Length: 139
Image (tube, rainbow, N blue to C red; front, side, top):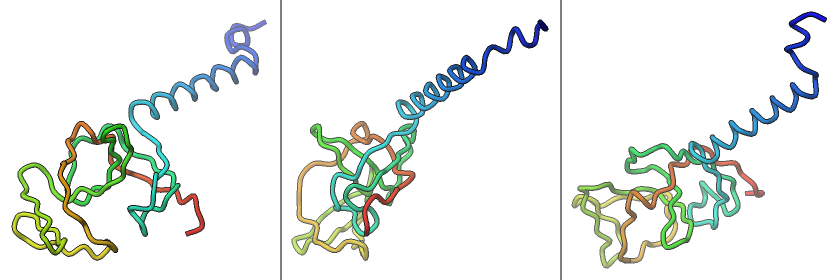
């Protein structure tokens, strides 16, 4: 029996080792680097529909206006688009118009008005930036 054959192991052992390595890599990716969620509703339609499968980058910490993110606030999962960052001034007028840094923002992809509300999103509530949308319905 040669040394090479003795060290290589059986095909079953090789399969199990490779399978465990794949599971370990997937666990590391899904637990620390990439997150996966299902869109909870159609608030981001027409770009993201309810039940679409989303992958997001957990490591991203440099967020910009227009980034689409997954966030968790008060134990509820939300999808959102960043409209302003720290240092920007944000106002929602009585006419439900968005004003950022004293400039009216035209939002052609928003099909409903934005009512006034309290509560900004803090960076520690952001789970990550969406990097992939997989359509799971017939829209």
